Image 1: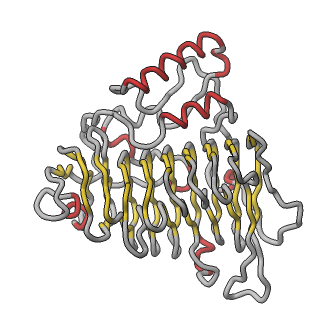
Image 2: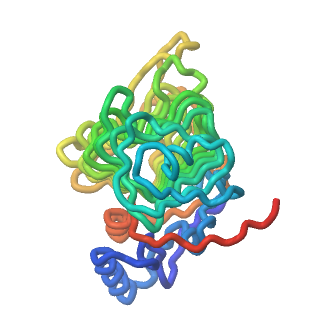
Length: 373
């Protein structure tokens, strides 16, 4: 197993190279200053080349979602209206059955009157514009190979109101560089046998039940779920960063602060590998929580397992790790993928995650021909 922990001469910070906004430019200047003072400690973050061309995102996710190709082999679909439906709309693109790489020719808010269901082999690529989805969210139902990049989700309302709902039986999904806040239910829910998913460089804020992985102890089929979460910023959200049942979850180089109940929760048979994350408590000091539930096909109730490797607990944060011998499997991500980019949980990492997660002001890269299959 190779874990990339490198000292580079020039760090990759999403949003810097391509048209940074003023506040990001200030951060860039500070990072250059820090580099000159201590170049040996600079960070090497993932995805340095995904903005070099439009389709460079395909197949580039780290972790369990690494095979997601989205609409790599489909034509471009240009969203030309902010209308909820009709010609040139995002909904029209998402319902089409053929592979599509969806880009936007407009900026603004799309008010969804109902869940927006995606079919397989789609990329929703928000680079080059500022698109916010509100009202309802995205639903990934029995689909595969989906990439969602550089969008904002805010203000979803109604029962079962998730920003991104992944269920049932969906796989090979990558959610990257999205800002999510203020939905009536979850921000990202991954349930009902959906697996091989990566969530990266996302910013979560102004919310209660942030991310649920495995919805119910009766759903024993969720033992197949595998999710990677990395380089995300959980910014004052109350709980579920994530909450996990049954699934295997690799969580690394993320920053969680000022939670209201807990940071990460392990429940029935879950296996969580927390690596080089920053946990900064507010009023509630314990980062990790365990809940005991009974799987539908077991006689006894059980909790999950959390392995903490290189995590940083600051401002009085207590890990809350159990010392009990948890009777469930204990996975290591190296059993499933050979490399990932992880750096020590330093102030430099915290600074970058605060400013360079979520929607970024980057232009849409040029499209290049895809080699024939």
